[in-house]
Length: 139
Image 1 (tube, rainbow, N blue to C red):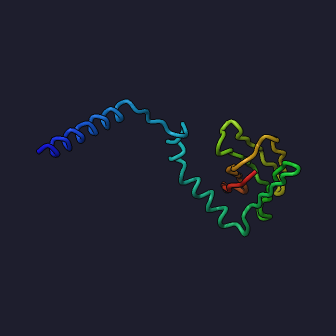
Image 2 (spheres, rainbow, N blue to C red; image 1 turned 45 degrees about the vertical axis):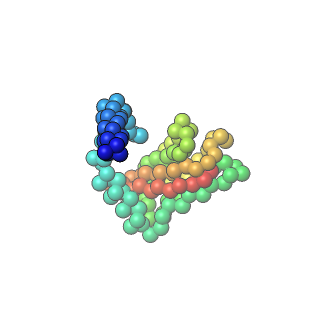
Image 3 (cartoon, one colour; image 1 turned 180 degrees about the vertical axis):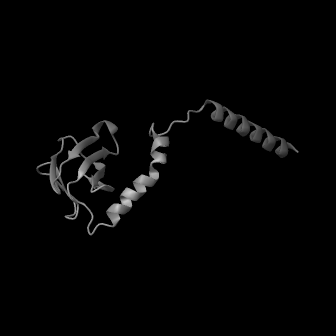
């Protein structure tokens, strides 16, 4: 009987603690516009599938000695318009973005303090189609 009452007391304490956590914990999300992003998920999937249909994937080269990044889009892409985003996984304040020009091979100079693992996101529009390519790279 003694063990049953101890088990019930522990159960009640756990339930009270869970109730407290449920009421007073914050429900924060990593991105503020997550709902709008969820609504556009189909468009993102279509843009990634458009990249998969290309004859070759975009090529990203990084030269540490000169500290620049080179992006080569497939030759079948004509007059791309879009953005290159470099998202630092450990420090959001170091995220940078570049505007793509109408060339298939482009170079961008990186800040000297940008080191470590980054997510590269290239999004562009060409001939009425949207494209999205993601890659992780160590800078």
